Structures are given as C-alpha cells and as structure tokens.
Length: 158
Image (cartoon, rainbow, N blue to C red; front, side, top):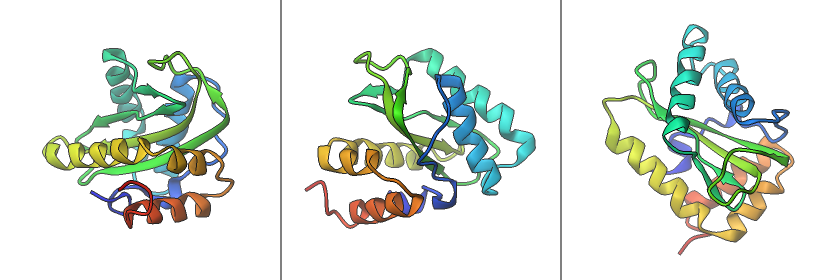
C-alpha cells in the first residue's frame, strides 16, 4: 500500500510542538481531526486506543523514528499522517534515543490486511537512511508530500 493511499497530506505536521509521547499522539490525532479525517467526538477514543497500543510496547523503533498506530471502528479506511519534531521527543524508543519522525496510522478493525500492508510499506521505506534524512530535514508539508511521492515511485528503496 503506497503512502498516497493513506497519508493525508493536509494533516502533516513538520513543526511538532509536543514535548512528550502523549502530547505527540494528541497533536497528530488533532491534526487528523482538524483536517476532517477524524470525527471530533471520536478524537479522545482514538488517542486512548493509540496510548493503549503503546502500553504493549513502544512503537519507537529506533534511529529517531516512531510508528504509533491502532485500529479503530470510527474509520472506514486506513488513514495516517506524519509529524516531524526537529528537536526530538522522548518516546521510550527501543534504542533510547529521542524521536524526530512520527508515522501515525489508524485503520478500521475489519481491514487488518490493509493495516499490515500500510505498516509494511512504512517499515520498508524507513530502512532507507536517505529517505529518513530527507524527511527529518523537511520544512514544509509540501516537502514531505514530495518525498512520499518519490518513495511511492520506488526512488529510494530498491
């Protein structure tokens, strides 16, 4: 599943102000809500679902990257966004480092295959150091969108 199938470009945040894990999750879910992707009356339920998923084990996978995700019945298709924190945020990452790059994914519970395909694409692309470096250096949502389009066109990972 390509980024263009689930990342909502009008919800991308290249200037996260959050300073801790819960604040990052709240800010990114809030961005998806503000862009019309999530219903405002479901926002808190979705935040709690993502936090509950984090209790199972941090989605901070290392190298300054985290992939907070959940399944939630309020969405009908996988939706996601990207957040960038120039200074990094403590996220209980596997390597103990601060996280600068966040890929959030929310999928409907009845489409586990789509959820896994989206996570697989994120994981595959995040293995490419150039892709990650370009994203971390992005200053605008347009920059991020361009990099994602290049990734969708296989310009990073072979």
